[in-house]
Figure 1 (cartoon, one colour):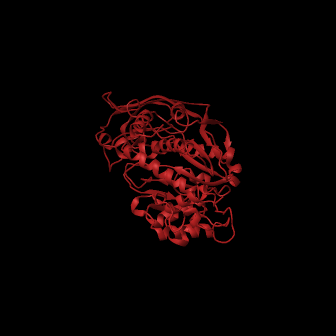
Figure 2 (tube, one colour):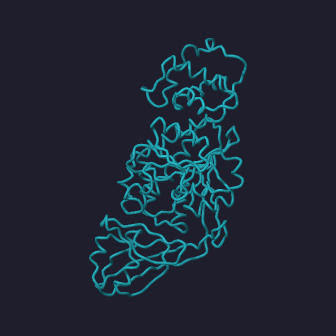
Figure 3 (tube, rainbow, N blue to C red):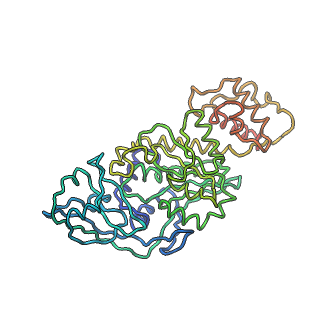
Length: 436
């Protein structure tokens, strides 16, 4: 279980140093560690497989990599910093002049103590990443570049865990990626939150939706997943979330709409955006994460993306500074609880329907007039408590528009009452057998 900050920190510390890539032993080791927290079924797509316009690459195996200066001193060393070698570098053992070496070096002048994260997955290349403060001191002479790597037939692995038993026949996808080495916000925040959400949702007494939890290497992994499951998801999927960059200092969650921008989660987050409790971004196919694949034109699945400190908005992105101190692990529990509350509210976002649909219901004999038990409205905090008149107004609107067409989102827009305050009233009406 991932209920406490120490439990999250322990998992983070175990995963952080593993040298991950889009394939290979580091990725599989990380996926195996996560099976302690959710029962992942692994689907493998072999190297060389054609998945739409992509070919599954060979696995990258690296055992060592280092750069020696003219005096034989190591100035980049994969064994001490797995960002030091460009991810997916081809093997090399070569002596070369500084001028030639510079074409294979990567650093960040604006942040001279940080090491950048650089990849070359699909084009043969090699290189080293190092702090600019080190690079700036390199003197002319002969340098030795050594990368002990190879490429072998293997597979791209996707981990799937399911929570079935939903009453609606509709599916929610919760997805994240696991392929960056030693990245905190832009890597481990997603799968750690995903694993904790699986545990939370598995303990719900009932669910209206089925939930599919997916962990894959970014881009190629989601493409492999969609090659297997995409067409079957078109009719069944209600909505989805890609979890990414959920650490960092930002206070509010940030939601990126799906391409269609009209799913139940799109509409729900639009309401949160109007309330000022969440930032909402438009769909943009030029950046982002795996939602770009899920939302591609032929699938057009209703998958949005949820983040906190979003990619590209902070200088720590794709550098060694995206570390344990940057993500503020103590805030992970709040993020997990916030997302669970959102998914609970979303459970009520299907069309509502009354059990007895004719005329007004007699509320007094059920203890619903003029008040409903006020703790039921404490979804956000005590300062958002609905007064008696507001509660009665919410009840009458819900029962009037529970016609099999209107949703709780519609009622929130009609009444101006927060959807987080309406949702527990719907739960109470359902418990009293007034709503189906």
